[in-house]
Amino acid sequence: MDGLNIEVLKSYPMPDLKKVDVLYESALKQLNKKIVVLDDDPTGVQTVHDIYVYTSWDEDTVTKGFMDENSMFFVLTNSRGFTSDETQKVHEEIGKTLEKVSKGTGKDYILISRSDSTMRGHYPLETKTLKNTIEKMSDKKFDGEIMSPFFMEGGRYTIDNVHYVKEGEELVPASKTEFAKDKTFGYKNSHIGEYIEEKTKGEFKAEDTTYITLKELRSIDITGITHKLLAVKDFNKIVLNAIDYTDVKVFIVAYIRAMLQDKRFMFRSAAAVPKVLGGVTDAALLKKEQLIENNNKNGGIVLIGSHVNKTTLQFEDLKNTVQPMEFIEFNQHLVVKENELEKEVKRVINLAEEKIRSGQNVVVYTRRERFDLDTDDKNKQLEISIKISDAVTSVIGKLGVKPSFIIAKGGITSSDVGTKALKVKKALVMGQVKPGIPVWMTGEESRFPQMPYIIFPGNVGEIETLKEIVDLLS
Image 1 (tube, rainbow, N blue to C red):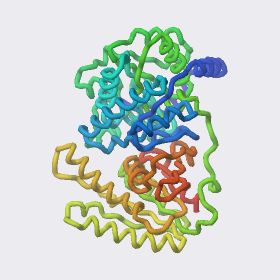
Image 2: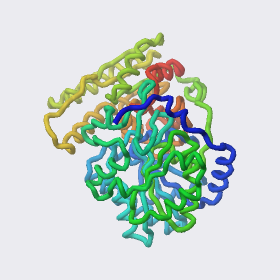
Image 3: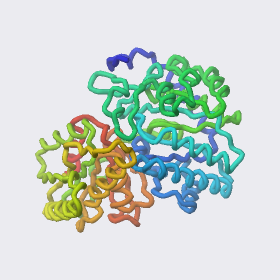
Image 4: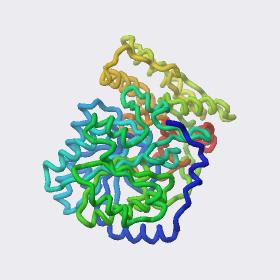
């Protein structure tokens, strides 16, 4: 399967945008259900603003989400950092809690399993577990599952049922990127129907999948798309092709019409669907004065845990900054030596605190050479990764000085910083500092209350984006 030139995106004529918006806004008014987004790492809020994200899923927390005035809330599960057994347990707990709270509040809900735009994660385990748990506890029946990895801000497009990742001026089939080689969540197929067949081990076939085409979306064929959705049953799969938010809006109109005819679907999507389904408006990028406390003269800290190629390129470009900057390497390879990782944490913290107090920015980065564990056991590999991540993120959790800003680079890294290091229970999503790069405002219970925390996904942004953000905040 070959790549495409980025110019192909312009070859699809746009529909009447005013007509789409009228249909879309009218459809949203008929939506009277709470939208619950389960986020497998904290980057899922990279398209929204003024929405709350919770880091636990107990009954009290979920009830707060249901009673919040917003139509949508996020629950950060961080399940991409879990083993399969942990993931199944957590999603059984969440399914039970959702049903209990739904019955208690009298509010029905729409469920979005938000995952990686390059199709990594515990699929189909998460959505299958949710479906089975919820159906067991209620009279609900899920007719289908909507697959939508489209994420424009990250350069992720689905064309003719094939998912592509933008690399320079080329759209590369997802299976030919480094993401598909992920040791825990790797895959072989870019065609989403074939990806589903691969991941479900043939339980759901590519030939039985329902495909919503760009032609249908661009011709605003609401009736035709709705009929397709009405025909789906037995939790079969629906693939949404999309290269622009307009495509998602058209689909959501048809989805709501099908839903009003008693069809129930679960979403497995990247960050675009929550924004559109939740009716979240566009907002200006955040500015320095919104992100830095005037009375904090300390330096900031950047924590780089991600090892994807884009992160490494961004890290190298950051070295070109003219801002005073201390670069501190964290040697995660010491994980194989008893007590050495703990000593490394202390060394890095002592140096970081000294520089931050002096007003200098600090970059703590994991050693760039990949650490390869000599085992094919995926759960063992994940356990070692978690141990390393815990050590790296504890650098921020044990800081004895409040930095002027915190940037965490990488999905699992940013999740662990938010939940384990900063101990956030509830955060307000302020918006984005750059496209696809969200900012949390930490709650009063956190280690550093009322502090903007920048969550920088490993595979988002251009080469110069990390440097631009640090320069903005300095």
